[in-house]
Amino acid sequence: MRRSELVRDPPPSNVRIGKGALIDDDVRLGSEGGGAPVRPIDIGRDARIRGGSAIDAGARIGDRLETGRNVSIGEDTVIGADCHIRNNTVIEGDCVVGDHVRIAANCFIARFTTIGDGVTIAPGACLANDPHPGSDAHGCLRGPTIERGAQIGMNATILPFVTVGERSVVGAGSVVTRDVAAELVVAGNPARVLKSISEVVCPLDLEEGDYLRAATHPDSMRPAPPPSQNWK
Ligand SMILES: CC(C)(COP(=O)(O)OP(=O)(O)OC[C@H]1O[C@@H](n2cnc3c(N)ncnc32)[C@H](O)[C@@H]1OP(=O)(O)O)[C@@H](O)C(=O)NCCC(=O)NCCS
Image 1 (cartoon, helix red, strand yellow):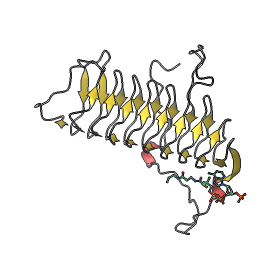
Image 2: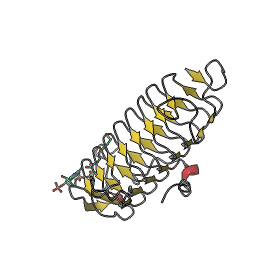
Image 3: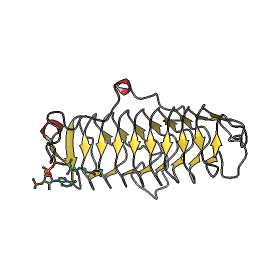
Image 4: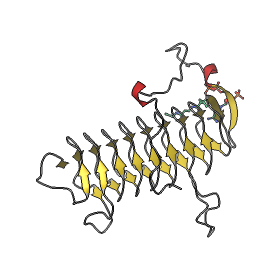
């Protein structure tokens, strides 16, 4: 394990790791071939990055990132503070992820996706960026924008160019083909509006009122970080 304050197994040059970070030895930082990454990698304080994970050149990550095993973070992706990314999730390059974001296991986040503060993404969700996969028009790519506090259910698919509005909830297994306004619950294939989030009740009556309050920290209620330099 690499601990940033121990120089027993120093990271490649061009990789800055904040104090207190704990990174397993079999985490790849930079390109497949080894050596220093072409563009610097920046990992904040107190990160915990588990084995089999890979972080590509140009990635910039805030404090206290926690990953599961085999998490992949692509080139030039920018991730805020206090994020958790679980086993086997792939975040491709040129994505922007805010603070306090939770992405569960086995998710796929395509290149050019924007995820706001306090977003939760349940296991197996896929966010797509190419409306016509297999076409040669590779310029026509844009991942979804998931606005802050939104919640994406298990195995949901969000299609390219779609925006899911602030604090909206996407039901499990849904395919979201059109923009979703703020504070709505949508579900189905294609996803349709079921209700307002204010109408959702807890099946166990555990909490009254604002049941779907997003799991955001008060400090995170500010705009998502600016897109990375290469975001188009
Ligand atoms: C979408 C969701 C939030 C709606 O919850 P709810 O407000 O309690 O909705 P209800 O159970 O009252 O269902 C309302 C209607 O929507 C339908 N519905 C609910 N969830 C649906 C879904 N995911 N896909 C399609 N239809 C759905 C119900 O069958 C019901 O239809 P009906 O009125 O014809 O019987 C919830 O069903 C859901 O999918 N949550 C995500 C769960 C998840 O992925 N968790 C991840 C962590 S484990």
